[in-house]
Length: 172
Picture 1 (cartoon, rainbow, N blue to C red):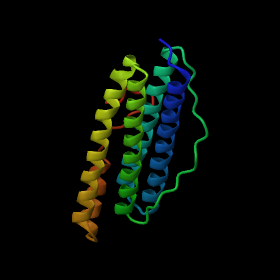
Picture 2 (cartoon, rainbow, N blue to C red):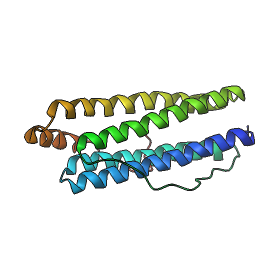
Picture 3 (cartoon, rainbow, N blue to C red):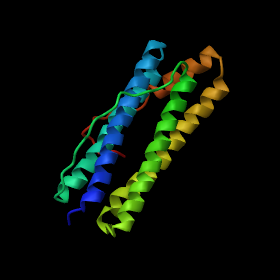
Picture 4 (cartoon, rainbow, N blue to C red):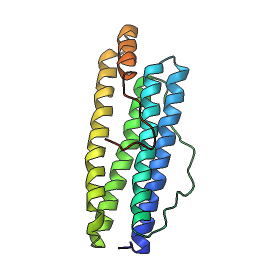
């Protein structure tokens, strides 16, 4: 069943936000590369790719229902990342923005009695809890590490161990 125009627009705004999230993570990865933290940069690049997978899920949902997915205009990311802690704090801030948008999309779908979007949106609600929790844990470790160079390098090495996936892979 096709979505009404208003709900289609809401889904398209979410598609745009997912692509913007990818750009934020990509920029944060650049910042960590410039600070010689390749493990953190790799972790952030993986997050950027995962955001594209998320956008693709919304695109597929709209297309499968006979609607017209649109990306919109992606803005250049405005991030603060002088340190690793600032980098991951920026990432958490953006994830919280995405979480709020997902909750708004859930509300919009419920108001339109769009029950067919529930499985997708429920998956995203769970995913956002996981995303925020993971980044919060990294922030906690960065706070514990403080100015300890060996501790920071250990965390950098740990984050480099994240499995590699592609933008076409199914998100976990």
